[in-house]
Amino acid sequence: MAAARPSEDQTVNGVLAVWNNCAPGANEAYERWYRTEHLPERMGIAGFLEGRRYIHMDGANAPASALRPRYFTWYALTSAAVLERAAYQARIEAPTPQTTYIMRDVFKDMIRAAMVRTVHREGPLGGFAVVARAGSGEAAARLDALFDVIAGRDEVCAAALWRHAHAVPEGAPPTSARRRPSAEERLRGGDRTVAAAALFETLSAPEATALIRAIERLIEGAAQGAADGPPAANLDSDPAPRDTSDCRVDGYQLMCRAGPAQP
Image: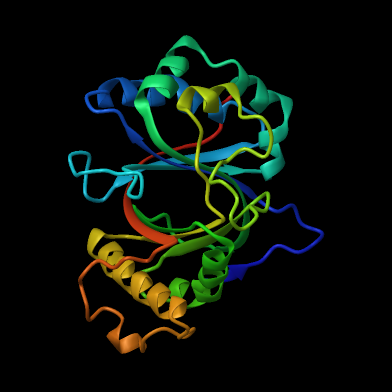
């Protein structure tokens, strides 16, 4: 895979990344809203290029928590500035009745981040995504340092590194808003955010599982001051899940992929 790094004379691609859970018993309404209203609405906004929805590899019936969101969605944008423009702002400030219900009563544990794509490694579309999200600037720096090592592993078919479009000061409250929260966010009761995230696509569930373990070990090693992590031969030797503190790693299965609405 060839790495593409943006230069000053190129438009830096933006990403809107969302992690969330769903209220118990509301999955059917949630999925109907996403398919018939929300995804088409978002993809009809100028600057939204693609949307992908995922569900946690452990499935819809596995326990979910604020630290382990069941759903992950990301949108490719021409730039993060798309989220500041009138077309997008009009949607999030005037939600439809169905969106109002979903945002108020169904969306749970929302993590939302307007991101800048800083590194992108092209490759085939994978059916699984291993996503590492960094909750602090320090964790983001570790993720950045480890990105090339992880992206070069055999399991990875495509990869991207995203940085928060607006710097989040260390120790600041975990809110996604730079200014007054939008009407949608107020319905959700406030969102958390991340400083950075890295996405690694794989073609199979076993590859994703192996990659999760390898990333956890690398992050743990970096956090302990071993910047190079464990030797490559030992990365997969311990199958036990690990506490990666302010850098969480989860595996997701692709549910759908959508392009922009046609005129």
